[in-house]
Image 1 (cartoon, rainbow, N blue to C red):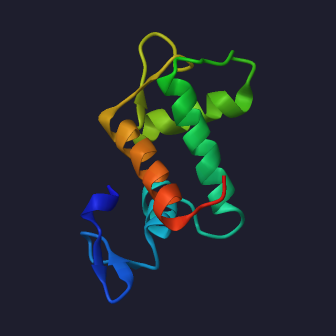
Image 2 (cartoon, rainbow, N blue to C red):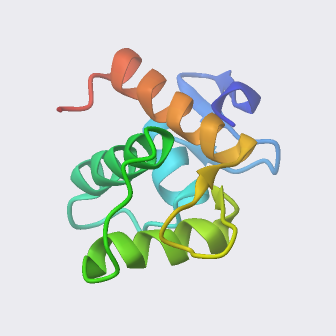
Length: 113
């Protein structure tokens, strides 16, 4: 996703023409759907941890409501797919790309871990 951004005068322009201060802002607001206030870096890292958990097939029980919420959310966004139960998903190509992009943003822009 971030590979589609064009750097123009120190800002990053998305294919739809919207300009972002940095790659991280694009991921957080356009892809993840955050408004930008609060603690978006920490929540992006939370999403990263969830995606890594799914990739490792380290599934949580139904009683883990934050995990279950992320499963439903990620399924709706197309980052994961699932078979008979939403709590045991796998990453889609889009989910793999999101995880790669988050890791790239952390490496390039120095998001705190």
